[in-house]
Image 1 (tube, rainbow, N blue to C red):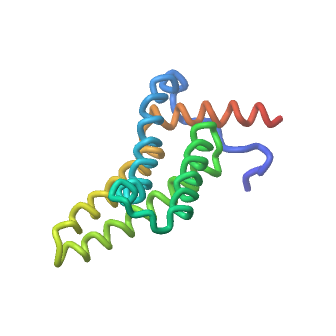
Image 2: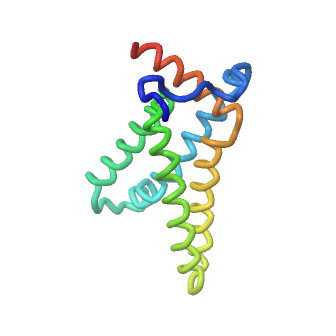
Amino acid sequence: MRNPTRGPDPSPFDPALAEGGRVPTLAVLAGLFMLATTPFFGHLLQGNTDNLARNVLYACATAVLLGQVWRGSVWAWRLTVGLGMFAGLLIFVVGMLAAVSNWQGWIISLAGLGFLLLAICLVAVPGIRAFLDVRWAARRREQR
C-alpha cells in the first residue's frame, strides 16, 4: 500500500523535457478553456444574455481549475483529465445523435473529439507530463 504522505511517485519522464513542455501545456490548457467557453461567448456575441450570471460563473470556475493545473495541483489535473474525458465522450455521442438529422451535429462531435484529445495530451505527451511533474514536485516542496 502506498504511503499517503509521500505523494506521487517520482516522475518517469526526463526532467530535461520540462522546459520544453511549458508552451504545449499552456496551449492545451488554453484550448480546453476555449472549448469549454465557446458556446457561452458565441451566445453572448449574438446578444443572448440568458443565464449570464451562471455562464460567467462557469467560465470563472473553469479558469480557476485550469489555473490550478498550471500552478501544479495534482487534484486539479486529475479532475481536469476526468472531466475532459467524460465531457468529450458525452459531447461526441450527443453530436453523433444530432448529426443524424442535422449537419451541426458533426461540429458538435468534433468539439467532443477536441475535449478527448486535449485531455489525453495532459496525460500522454511526455513534455507536458515532465513540465507538470516538475510543477508538482515544486508545489510539494513548498507545502513542507
